[in-house]
Image 1 (cartoon, rainbow, N blue to C red):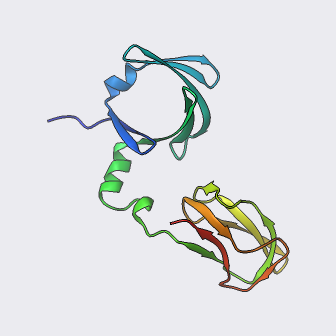
Image 2 (image 1 turned 45 degrees about the horizontal axis):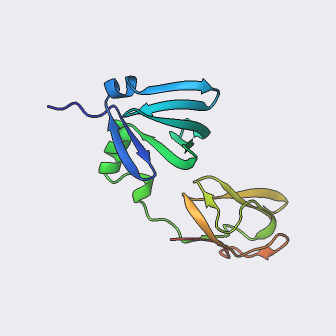
Length: 163
């Protein structure tokens, strides 16, 4: 029986399974801070870590001048995905409605911007309290339907997401 991979790395949507031994034997050397030198099949690569989210196991790398989005998946992540219980399998919203009537006091995003779940989108003031309205899931902002200073009713469409 083949032992499952200890780590799966997803780079720009393509997955690579690495055993612990393969992971331990990668020829990667830290140059300084966030800069690394990586040797693959006698080909040299320059890697810079631009962003790293330890909790989400995601990072953005600059590999030989190209930006790459990387996700590290554990066996548990793969099992959850296989069972259909991960958030990428759930239905995503195409619009975000105002949860309450209020006044838009700040917009934190721009059209075309890519946001992760929990990213602050705008501030809605209701009953003298500022409510941070966040992204319900990973998305790209298609359209912002409100402006700063605009009063909105409950249920009003605040933001539309690309599908």
